[in-house]
Image (tube, rainbow, N blue to C red; front, top):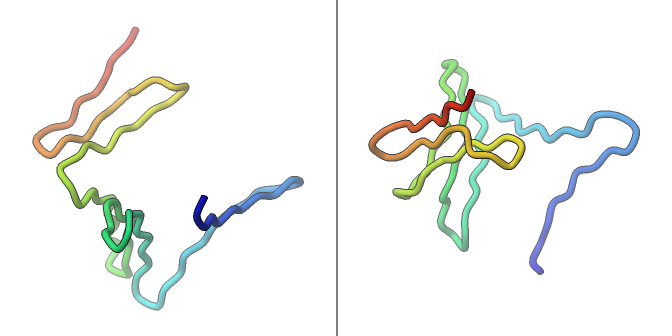
Length: 79
């Protein structure tokens, strides 16, 4: 349910580009509240930002490999 933006390409590479004059930003949220932000500007500054006290989790192959917490970074090492 709701509204979706779908980008698909059957024969090549699909992409989404956000371009601004001095900066570009994508906000992800619920209602009118931005919960996660990706931002970059013309001073070569890039930000991945969680606006609440929840972790940013990185997964590969359905396995958590790293977790950014508000107090530390946890990395899972497997040999």
